[in-house]
Image (tube, rainbow, N blue to C red; front, top):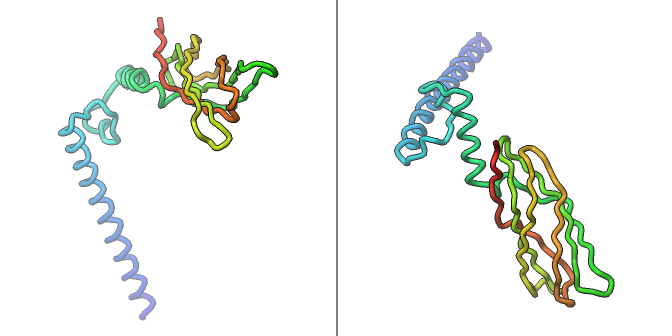
Length: 169
């Protein structure tokens, strides 16, 4: 008799917990929507926007393109950096691959900042260079940055400072 009571009690507890999480999730989602709209973030897609106001695919893609155009550095990543130094000169070439993870927006005119570091990791010089190339959406391209560095430089770090959204026709 006792195992049956324990089984019934465990099912009741289970149903109670599931009910609490379901109802609590509903109210949390409603509160999130209320707060999101009151802070002026109504253009950000949300998980309940499809229930309250259906949007078309074109509206969604326009929102994606707007976000990609406003935040280019969030969609660009530098990978596979190789440094080639001149044997008897201070000329340096940094080759890197830049990946564009944006769905719709291509980018151009990449402004890089190269930090020249000493053997103690102190910054000797910061050099800003612009590479005039275009990387279409969802693609990658090898870019090359040429500059002269101080002779004391032992290591380089590269940061992408700025990119301009490319016009799509």
